[in-house]
Structure formats: C-alpha cells, structure tokens
Length: 360
Length: 246
Image 1: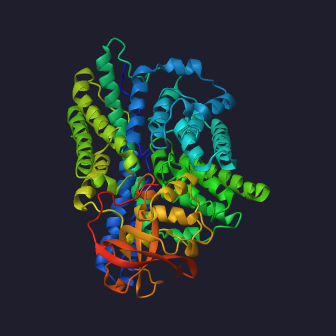
Image 2: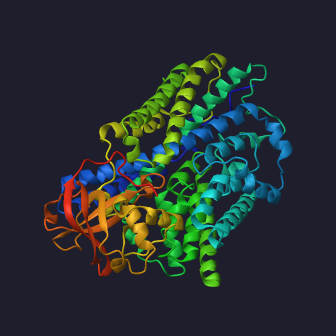
C-alpha cells in the first residue's frame, strides 16, 4: 500500500539543492523586484501630488484585484483538487498503463481532446495533471491535456461561440489551441520524465520494473466512506499546495495590473506583429479565467488585428502569470520555461501568419 | 513540529476552515460582489461547502492513515502562511470596490471609442426605456449608431455612477463611470459618460451620484459623442452591486 518514499524532498520548490550563490542571487533578485515595485508605487504616488491618500488607494486597488482573482479561482482549483484526490484513490495505475497509448503522437492527440471529458479550466487542470503524472501518465498526453483543456472543453467552446458566433475566430481558437497543444506535447515527448517533472511527481515513471512504491492510495480493503475521506484528504493537501502558487501568481498579476497602465499595451493596435505581441502580453498579465476571456477579447476586436485577438484567445488560457506559477508545482523550472516559451512562440507565429495571409 | 502528522493535519484543516469562513463572511455581508461577477456566486457557495468537507475529512481520515500520513508534497510553515495571506489581507484592508484610483490604469470605454458589442446586448439596450438605461446600456446603444452624438440628442437620462475627474475635461465637466466585470475584477473595464454640470468641480472623485439630465452633442478628447447636460446631480449611497455585468 503506502510506503515511505525513498527520496522525499521536503519542499517542492527547492527541488535540487541550490548552491549558496544561486540562493543568494535568488534572494537578491526578489529584493530587487520588491524594491522596484515599491519605488514605482511611491514615485507614482508623489508625482501625482496626492501623496499618501493616493498610495492608500493604490494598495486598496491591488488588494481588491488580488482577492478578485483568488476568490474567482478558488472554486475551480478546489474542484480540480477533489478530482485529483478521487483519481488518486479510485483510479488504478494499471488502467492508465492499459488504456492510454504510449506512443507520442496518439498520446498527444488524445491529450488534446481529453478536456471534453474532464471539463476543467486553467486552474483546475494543474492538480489533475499532476495526479495523473503520479499515476504514470505519459508526458506528451499530460502536456497536451494541460495546454488544451482550458479551451477544448464544453464550457469554453460555448462561451466563445456566444461571444463570436460561428466564424473564423471561433474555429481558429479551437483548431489552433488543439494544434499548439499537440505540437508542444510532441516536443516534450522527446524528453525523459525525470528531466521534466519534479522528483516528487515522477516516481511512478522511475521504475516500471520494480514497483518499490506503487504510488496509489488505494485502501483496497477499506470501506467506501473511508476511501472517500482519504480522497478528500489528498484533495486538501493538493489544494493547499497549489494554492501557494495561485496566491503568488494572483499577487503578481494584481501588481502588474496596478502598476502597468493598460493604455501602454493598447496604444499599438494595428502592426501585424507588434499587435500580436501586445495582446499576448495582455493575456499573460491579465490572468483572466478562460471561461470568460472571449467576452473580454470581443471588446478588442475593433482596435486590434484579428491575429492579435486570436493570439489572446489561444495563448492566454495556456499560459498566464498565475498558471505559470502553478506549473512550478509540477514541473522543473527549465520545463516551465519551455512550457511558457513554446506556446508563446507558436501562438505568435500563428497570429502573425493569420494577419499576413488572411488579413481579416 | 509540523513534521508531526497529527499536528500538521490539524493546521491544514484549520487553514481550510479559515478560508471557508473568509469566503462566507464576504458572501454574508455582500462584499463578495466587490470581487466577482454575481453569476459566479454559486461557485463561491460550492467552494465554501467543499472547503468545509475537505477540512472535516482530515478528522475522519486521520484514523485510517495515522501512521503513514505523509503527503507527497509536504507543505512547510511558510507555505501554509502564504495560503492564509488572502484572509490576512482581506481582514487588514477593508473591502472596497474598484474606484477612481483604478481608472487611470485601465482602458476607458467612453462612447466616442469604437466598441464591439454583442448584437443581443444592443437590442436589449434599445428595448429599455431611456430613463431605465444604465451606463452600460447607453454605451451599448451608442455603439450601434455611427452618429450617436446627433442621433441621441434630446433623450432623457437617469444614471448612477461614481465621479472621476479627467484632465482632458473642461471645468464644468466630469466623468461618471462604472466598472463592468465579466468574471472577476481582473477583467474590469470602465464605462463612462461625460456630464456637464456647472458645479462639477465640487464633486469628489469616487463619490457616487445619480445624474438626471438630457443628452446633448459634445466631445471628449476631440471625438464627438453624446454628453449629459445634467439638471440634477444627487449624491447617493454606493449600490449593493457596484459593478455592472455584461
């Protein structure tokens, strides 16, 4: 059943032992960033002339936006955590081995459409993917699922349809989200799980031969109510763990929203390349839930190129500030960098291609 | 200390309960609507139920897995403290909706700017009586017209919003605004109309007012648009739901 894990890392964030210089650098960077943010706040406050009251309003705005993102995301994160707990207790590792393809391409294709069955948004998908990886899910399926599920699911498809109707943006969003997720999944299938996943997540991949630690929490002979209680406990652990990343991400997003004026991003609406980059930046900073971003994008359709709006709708759900911080709870840093960079580049290419060739 | 499973489980359960209590308090006093669209309230209710259920399971599950209750992703004290941060910030900073301070940082949708609006929203706005329309309805109605400034002139207006002084306005003009929230305040946009009123300068930023008047052709930032020539500007209490929902 449950056995002590041999190499348990106490903190997920501190995966390999960082040497003192790296740690020092990290601290210095954090302090520098905090100082920069504070300076920006104060400078702004005193330039506006109102001084302290203005600063107070700024902080209030920050708290309101931070709590807004957090309160909005909490139910979905909790739902994802509960699904993850139920998977941990009730889904057999051998079922995943048995029913899901091992090969990269079919795996990525299946991962791309799994959102239809597991309708989760970008907050809920992270704990589910982590649990599935613990159960030995192949890399490509999980990555494709992680990136595609926030768009390829019934709720988001419906909301996009009601905002844009049957048209190029609706079809483009679904098709390109799927394609980019599959391509990134394929690229990741070249890597070994232990290079990509955090040590705590990937031990199911370690030794298919000798299951030292079958990482399932199946209490085979326990009665149902006890197993459900176990699933909920695991859900609580998952929720608390992922909530840290959600909170850090919401704070970053709220700080960006308070400090960076949107007009700075929106000033350039028409260049076929720069408009796409700006909408991607906006999607990253806003960290809006994918279920409603279509309605938000609608407001930009007049002022921005279609390729840019499409990039907002494709890139935003895959990666934004809060979700990329949550990725840190599953993947190693280098892998997170790729997970941000690959969708960024691919959706940029898509947006620019759209602007140059279709030009609607 | 945190290594002791029982102690850690109790701490986790308490934190989950604290989050649930925090959400419940915001729900109970109505300040939840300062953060999210009303439509999402049901999810918050479900989250409260879920958090309590998960917290209780720590008690029920304790018997089952007492010895090996290690979690895979052991959370440190720092991590647990971070999870309490929303509660702490929420208690320290009294709940307050977005206001004038947030406008400077956002795109202001004044009726002069081209806006893409769902046809259904335009139709809904058109069906309402002129004095029944709120700020969002008016902007939706304007968006369907290519020459709103002339077309809507003379119609009576009765809207509520908060005051914002913009540098680009004349001395007898002020903006009256509301935020539109489709999901949570992270996606808030501003809808704004220009109000012409002799005593405009006496109004304070963030004050909530009811404006009654008539539409006139005017301009903001060089672009023609309908402005409200106010007959009455009455201070009012902030509405229970300060935001408008599209």
